[in-house]
Figure (cartoon, rainbow, N blue to C red):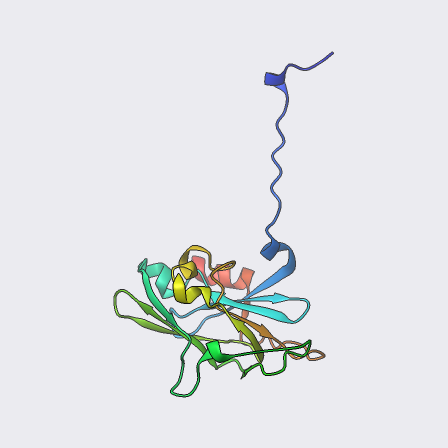
Length: 171
């Protein structure tokens, strides 16, 4: 006996995103409201993004500019890598500044790498559309890609897991 279309059960299957499937989220909480999210991949690639608890999200303020010129002589957009070993990539450590985020309310936030390795690229799309940081933080709005040294276990002692982060943020 056939079941009428109206009575059939609709199965709704949602698949996890690429980020959820292939990356491990770690969070660095610093300076109260300047939190970052590190998306680790098993191939030692790490995407640096803003965490949802960052002050920019809390204030709901528009971003005026993302500036990758972080020093008088250091412009992260001049980072040019080549080859499998990413020759020419700038070395960064946990405290290295990746960019400065300038907001409409004249506040400026310093975004640090949070991880040690070679800077593979910075997201130059943020120069033309800085609000990608707000609208697509974990995808098109990532800040930088850092390649950790192969053969070295990543040091995650300065960060917390998603579960630990959610407990702190939800309080």
